[in-house]
Image 1 (cartoon, helix red, strand yellow):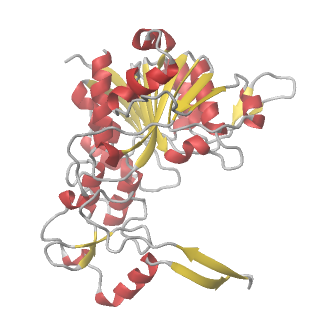
Image 2: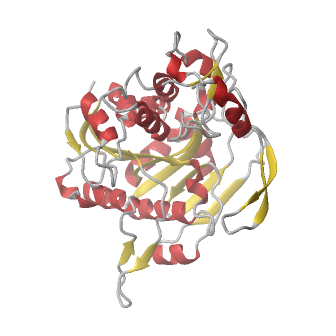
Image 3: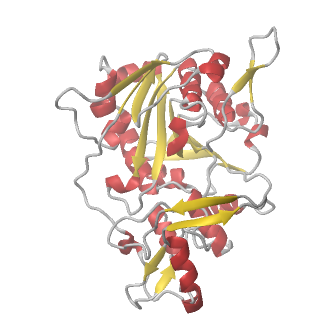
Length: 398
């Protein structure tokens, strides 16, 4: 199998690399840096598993793009931030993104290195950000990539819809040079690319539109990023493509008839006592998980009515888990609590079970970090099984 060069930005503990290296991708540069942290837990974990290529643990803002090796594929799980821009000077046509906003580093590196493919991951709310100007930030991403000569596809994917053991929704973005897109798509219309012929359609099949009444949204993306920042607003649907500044998106329904994995399938046996909930704490957990309709008072003394719905307690183990967050294992509503099949007692998930929910090898994060940080890393991680599916599709393109 031919070795193809890949660069991984915002690498975390290596989910993209784990999913893609089996298909011949050679990681020549990886960057992971957690601002304000004395101990770089994620980077240390990454470096303990991977020593081929350059492992960078510095602020990506300070990395010289020209120092990054040439590569055919750029990947990264970048944070959802405010991507807006402003004019640099009153009489200048230059633009300036907010300092520390990591999208502009991706754009800077893409412009310098010109990779054939780009594969990015973000939270599902990216398509609707910011709340006061829905769709603006994603429009900026599309405009930037189109301006750099890339054709773009996107898909919001729930891992459980394709057989994996966690209901984890993420936005994935695939881009390729427009010249290569012409070879991939031919003369296919956008809806056909989204439903059948595109990168995500091949990776994550959807039910085909048989009656022609599927909702389609078309929007012209401004080329001027300042104009886009100030006035652009639209609704992007969960599956779409954007070529030459025309974005088309539709609502799709996953189609999958393969095996399904549940939370119960990833559970350990003979779990240590420290993961079990103490009897005295059970009422607190029951209250946190339960529905609430009560009067509360702010620090300033104002009374207000607080309501929230219930969360399953305990979590069912015969279906995929809820989304795992960075606060997993702490005393909060989002933490999973299960009834252990062996003992019948309530307990938390173990770090290894969380690794399995994200598709990492057992004890991947057992590299000197605390359990709390292991949970945190898995709450931030992507689902490796989805990346493997995308790796297979990438392999078929070359």
